Amino acid sequence: MKKTILIICDGLGDRPVKELGRKTPLEFARTPNLDKLAQMGISGAMNTVDIGVRPGSDTAHLALLGYDPDVYYTGRGPFECAGVGMEMLPGDISFRANMGTVDDELNVIDRRAGRIDDTEEIIKALNHTKIDGVEFILKKAVGHRVGFIMRGKGLSSKIRDCDPHKEGVKVHLPEPLDESTEAKFTCQVLEKFLKMSFDVLKKLPMNIEREKQGKLPANYFLVRGAGITPQLKSFKDKYGLNAVCLAGGGLYKGIAKLIGMDTPEVIGATGKPDSDLTTKITKLIELYDKYDFFFVHFKGADTLGEDGDYEGKVKFIEKIDSAIEPLLKIEDALIVITADHSTPCNLKAHSADDVPVTMFASDIRDDDVEHFNEKECAKGRLGHIKGENLMPIVIDLMGLAELFGA
Ligand code: ZN
Image (cartoon, rainbow, N blue to C red; front, side):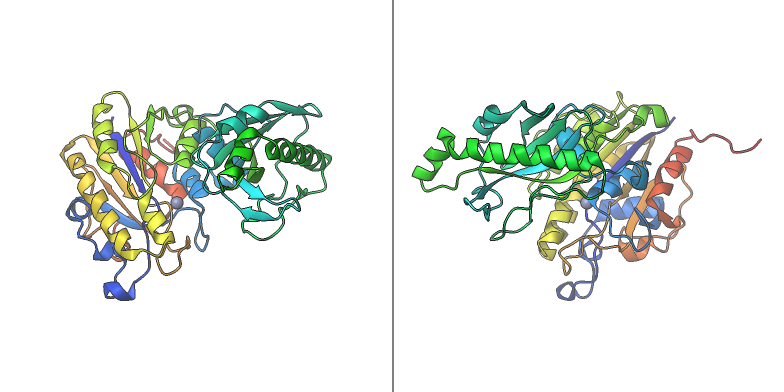
């Protein structure tokens, strides 16, 4: 059996940039190694979720790994909480949360409480609070972020974001998104917790000290992305493959954890454009005998696209190209390189544009594609596929597909 290395370059796809001579950052970048894979392999264009759909990173990754997001996506919270290592039970409602600063009328002053980093005291003061039989479980995440779980009977994830996503306006009070008693109950309990925690945090010595120093107090949980723990079949049960995820970003490790992939720490992997990409490849080679399937995630191109930084995106793509060079020496693997969605620099947001995909193995039928980019790959043998087609093709190329018929 061949091993598979699936490399997902987040937000890689783009649109023509005037300053780059109407080329996309991927067309403009110098990428000898990616081009070599495209020359020796088969390429195509892919819409990860569906044609005309602007995918989130979460829904796109689920689709690429073979989990239909229409069935399994309940909200981003569970993936973020799994990413910071929180254990989740069936029925738990998980959120993404920021520690923010609000005034006494609950107007948002700063959505990140002055980019606070030391939230341990806040967590200690409120973790495991119980209200009406519902336990609130909190865990520190990166910077101002906090993993936030509600555990108890009769809860629902059908509630509106309390984070208004901007400053200078009032926080949203929890509001049900459907008529169910569960959604109503969840909102009532959450509102009690948010009110109680605001009172506690105002008086917390750490916040009094911050205010003395002229810093913003971290006095409110801005929660969003409520989701109920999805019941996902493990990757091992689904495909019979031992899989490992090499990523820096919490969301990607969270998705991997929820489907039972191992997620070892990779030194220097930050999930940001400054991430050391070579350490992921070094780790992969170190673990090569131990696993059948390697999911490698590079985040930076997406962040740079959202900043509109096309020059930075070109440089990051070139960094990916040099980082993956050692993989070209592996003889018995299927290497798949693609993206979860496009993040055009002129849009500074995800778009529904398709993404390039290339697959290479020593015995693969090739095509006439010479360069790994949006325009060239679309001319390849794979044609136009959807994210849901990716794993079946991979499984076949690994030699594991079952015969349909006799
Ligand atoms: Zn993404």
